[in-house]
Image (cartoon, rainbow, N blue to C red; front, side, top):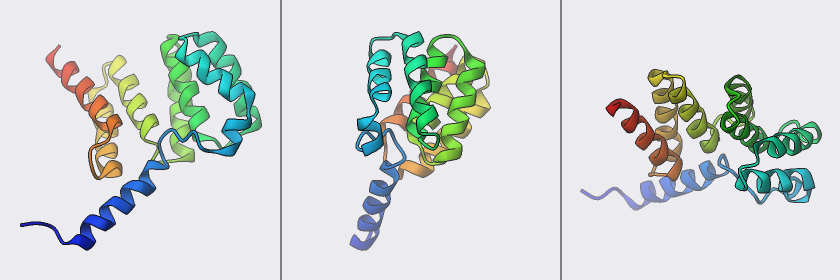
Length: 150
């Protein structure tokens, strides 16, 4: 039995609204902040030290930006500084509880310390946020599955 059209339309609208919780590069403040832009480039180059310095500077000017906090968490995690990584991912989720990237990355960080139940909590959160499959859910789901096989 096919769902009614209004239900499909509502699900698509909710998904579109939920997408704002992901990494959103269309925010004017982000595009205008050179430290944010350079920090993103440093992440792409896997230059964690520069990314942390630049994004920390951007975070001082934009204290309510969940994307900056998420990227800081990512840079700290990849530099091996998990305590600071957890701090920034948590801050990203305080600012935007529906931030898909922060849920995915925080789940991955929990897997790094062997805390499968906490990683599964973030997978469950993504399941509720995404409504239809989203890349963040798929990535965390795959990492959890791989962790279970080990």
